[in-house]
Amino acid sequence: METRNDWTRAEVEEIFNMPVLDLIYRAATVHRQYHQANEVQVCTLLSIKTGGCPEDCAYCPQAARYNTDVDHEALLQVDEVLTKASIAKMNGATRFCMGAAWRNVKDNKQFDRVIEMVHGVNSIGMEVCCTLGMLTEEQAQRLKNAGLYAYNHNLDTSEEHYGEIITTRTYDDRLNTLKNVQKSGLSVCSGGIIGLGETDQDRISMLLTLSTLSRHPESVPVNALVRVKGTPLENQERVSIWEMLRMIATARILMPGSQVRLSAGREEMSVTEQAFCFMAGASSIFAGEKLLTTPNPDVDQDRMMFQLLGLHPRAAFKGQENEMAAGKFV
Image (tube, rainbow, N blue to C red; front, side, top):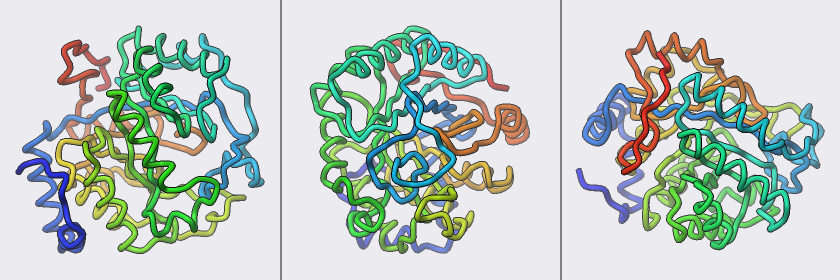
């Protein structure tokens, strides 16, 4: 199967709507053509600046306008971040992702500190990813020069449904940030969230947008909404495993070379449900007790799951000239 960037909506619909067991089988077949079947990229996500965000993303507990249990915290110090990165590496993570609750990156002393963090984490042999909001091509280049490997900027949902979830920035703002990241030569990490009140057509639209970018995202996070009290979406129904499987399997078929990341919502999933996701083409997880501010399975739970399923972590920088050995996870 060749990698394509010219998928049509009809083709994506046909794949997405396949009988679920046939869809999983097809995705598993594609997965094994492009990836080692039992290899999983292990990532850790740390909130380096929490709360107080001026945006109105309806799912997010860090939005200043919502009354949640998340407190506004200042940007962490470099030493604290490097300590947490070292612990993550010891626990088997090969990618360290840093998130700041900013609308966009500003050229100031705080950004200078993030640059120091990126350089420091890169120096201990981990892939470094950041999610800092919107950024310019020049800022993306500066992050790359400091050693950044990937930049995360999720589309969240379809362009059609986007205005129901976020009004403080546009869909084009998100796409422009992805273009700036790609121009700088950084890897793009971009996916979305299901469970926001969207339809299957919205999910198909988002997958179509991602799979027809000029380059497929290197990582595609598939998030299930974590319902947080105080946010507008606190009463949404929990996303079912079958909905997750359709998204993961379709993403795997459309973007065969990408890391499809089983992301938020994993804490509510059983090992059996997660095993189905790996079978359907998920090739990456976030490990550690928190994803920014929401709960996640702890390292011991994941270690037992890896042993049970016969999974092993993907080495950092795999496929790169400066490939480095990963820390042991199992």
